[in-house]
Length: 561
Image (cartoon, rainbow, N blue to C red; front, side, top):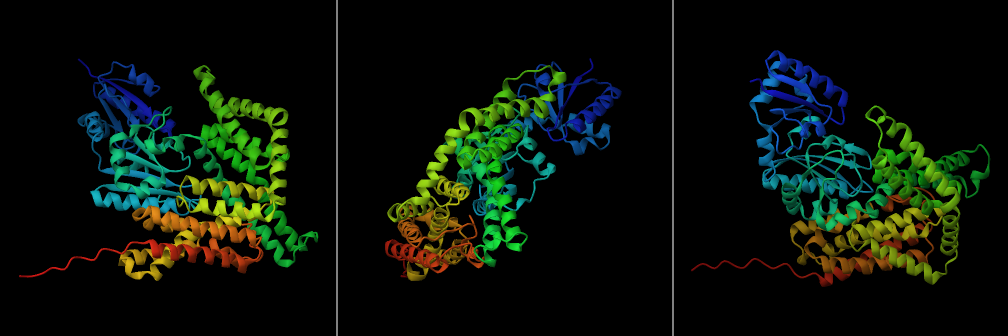
């Protein structure tokens, strides 16, 4: 009796190529004496009575079937040899084995700013893999774009995909693979547990399900916080460009931009263009995080309407979440015949979701949010010295609590949003406070050298540089060993810095760059006082931790008889 082979195209990235190659191999199978057919989807395959199912592109999660897989690159070779090789190897048995053990990994790391946690988590995963004898390829999606991009070959060879990300990343290329999600902080601080959980808990990703997530971070990863940080991540370059270009326009005089056609006026206009795009970008990528590409169009439109209605970044937040969840609802609930399904992403979802979001912004949401936003601006711009000092201390202290974690990022996201109101003191306090932990740890290793081993003193030197760059994660090696003392010392120093920044009325128009933004004229007001505030808080942290730090135990002497 002839064996029945079902070929299933399964490549989200190259569906047409997968279909063509499936048909090619089906013809080869027929010439070799097999009964063959091509399925339209994996769903059809699950209902099939075929003896063997061969997926073209990526593996199918069909545990009760005899499933083989042929990659697109393999399928382009000689058809007979490729088919025979697939028939000689039972991929299903291999897949069952990797459910309890794995040695080959690929990973993506990404954090909202794309500066510190992204690369530190990648390095931690690489070191952890080397420690356990695993093989891993890590793609970093940082502020300068994706680096070390994963190849189709490395993805196909991997047993497990680790997504150590604090923002939404595209997962289309991992459909059919076992995928595990966690935050960059978990991958960085608990690397061994991350690999253990990835091996045990990773689940096969299909087009309609999410990969497994570390339980301690599940709420963060699927909730509002994650979507908000995704919007901040994409908005940040606009804020940086707009703020610094506006600051540069003041180099020619504080009112030089009023001269039509002057270089100062042009720089001010370019910076203004970047600021105009901030809220639409923020809103659009909040919606993108929720609904993927279908959410982007209504999110961008909602953000522009929020700007036009004077609802600011608060309106952008509301429009982003509205657009995302409306687009997601339409995508899931709107059922069309197969022949019309292609109209959904390019016509129906953008049209309906944009229409609904636009009407809601105009008739329901825009005006009330604009009033709230205006009231908030008035409060921030007219608050007294005491309130300003208190706000500065709180924001800077929050930056020191978890060193790049949720509290740190919440404070940062809030102050970045305030830049749209032309309220710049909170940003100055936040950045200054974020520099204190790492610089403070460096000062402590200098003041109390005998209490730190050689590796810690080396980490102190690195932390000093990272702190100057506004990378508070430089203090993580110290906090991981001695969290209570390090965090307490950092909060005290950070709060002092934030209070001094507010007291000196320092303002900052750039949301990143550390002390190096001082090289740009007018980016920071009262720059010497700003430096003094950072120094005061850092020295305070260093002195406190040098005092609290317990002395390293000395090796016991070896006596001879």
